[in-house]
Amino acid sequence: MLKSATVVIAILSGAMISNTAQAENWDLPLAWPATNYISVSAQSFADEVKAATEGRVDITLHPGGSLGFKGPEMLSTVGDGLVPIGDMLLNQQVGTEPLLGMTSLPYFLGSFDEFIKFNAYFRPTLADLMQKNNQKLLYTIPWPQQQIWTKTEITDIASMAGIKIRSYDRASTDVFDSAGMTPVQLPWGEVIPSLAAGAIDAVATSSPSAVDGSFWEFIKYGFPTRQTWNINAMTVNLDAWNALSEADQKAILEISAQVEPKFWQAAQDEDAKNMAILKEHGITLGKISDALRAELRDRAAPLRQAILDKMGDEAKAIVDGFKPE
Image (cartoon, rainbow, N blue to C red; front, side, top):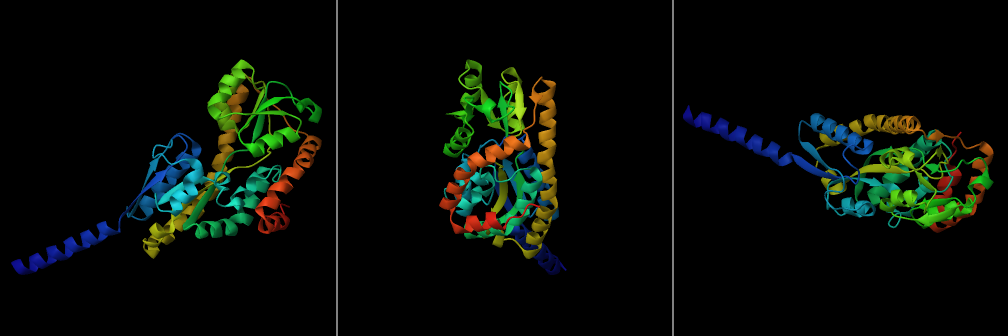
């Protein structure tokens, strides 16, 4: 009897050791604060994954850049296995994969609906690019529309002339210059002091950043120019992915497919919430006429074409094949 009990205990112990060995603890670095909707969405994803896999895949978030990985490094960071899973802003990865900057082509996508359609259209290419970089694509999540926040009203192209606007890289500098504005390239940390000192008159960013920066202290107007669109992707290192059971892989993919539409809606909800806050604080939320939007698109056309030429024939084929209607 004692011998039989010993055998049973040994079998149970072995099963426990086997289950423990299968458990995966994944550290997920995030550049954004814990309260940012992208981080909040990632946490809800992690919670669902843990529940669906019965704890076999346990994802721990590290928001605010606390693990030390920088945004432009995330494609290689995940691909090289420095972390098993990562969230990345795609247009920051163009140094490695230029096609990841497709949604940031100036004045390529005119509305959030077009953005949604392009996400579905581009997804097979995005999945292939991630596979090429030793990663599995799980889901995407967008940023809200880009806007120009100004001290003066914008009514037509002439009213934009000479406005000193903060730019953040060569591409944004060229886009604003094409509109007749005066770009001033600054890191984000210098934006508020520059607004206060009058060194700039405008900033292009989305509504969450406008609220974070308390723009109402310096800015009177906001205009949805939508000159670019930004999108993040959640990916997992292929070696880490292949170490999972087929059942857990299936569960994670099903969760990814279920949460992605919710996360896209979360971006819209976040924009609406922040726009209401900005309006409550006295910022006038203006509109861009169809004529002005067409003028801005036409002026940016040479820049858009130059970027496409640099990206190559595959990028041109993607643009030519996309039908937003």
